[in-house]
Amino acid sequence: MIAIADDLARALRSARFVAVLSGAGVSAESGVSTFRDALTGLWANFDPLELATPSAFRRNPKLVWDWYAERRAQLARVLPNPGHHAIARIEASVPRFLLATQNVDGLHARAGSRRLVELHGNIARVRCSEDPRHAVEAWDDVGDEPPRCAHCGAYLRPDVVWFEESLPAQALCAAEAAARACDLLIVAGTSGEVYPAAALPQYAKAAGAIVLEVNPAATPLSARADYALRFPSGEALPALVRAAWGEDAMAGQPSCAESSREGGNGAR
Image (cartoon, rainbow, N blue to C red):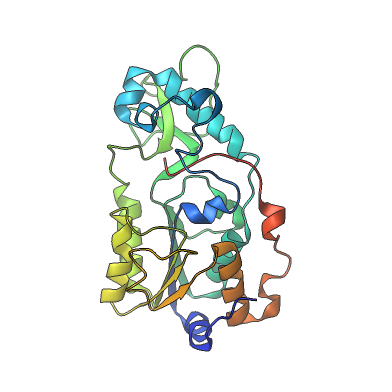
């Protein structure tokens, strides 16, 4: 049983605007491996920089396309865990909410989160490699090269942020605005070391918000957080929801064991 401080539960229950920043630790509880951990089997001898940069795609588009196709197939066997569902439950319970996730697996949306921005994109989406405005919902994954954009003929590529690329400006601006305007910021499953997302807790603190860190291990954020729950998010966040809104608040949601599946993915 995780003990939740009464004042923390009260702060969540009374918050007018809750923001959440989530990282790879949340998805790891569903069996989603980090980018480097997913480099196994036929991919074991590859360096991440050979698979997740614009220059790598220009050198060998088919290799990069096949790697992401395999990861999409792996993620099809993964389910959201109680941490994902607890975040969606918080969204449904407060007047204003925004989730900024560094994960590309789409598990938050599958758990019911709707007011979210994906700072690193989404591996399930595909877009034109030359014009990011041209997103594609369906494509033919056949032949000896990646499929091509119907608008300009350029190769399609995963709609994720690769090394050497900037975060999408609109998503980052929305996340920063939420951090500056929220009453409570929950930082779950992230080390707090990768900028610019790592600056969000600083913005929230400067604006007077309460900052809660949910992470089994201490991070660079820990000294500045108002509260810390040193448990996996799949345990801590459902406990927080129940403390704020009652024991039935997470009724009907799957357990950690039920939601864990083998899979592979990462931040890019």
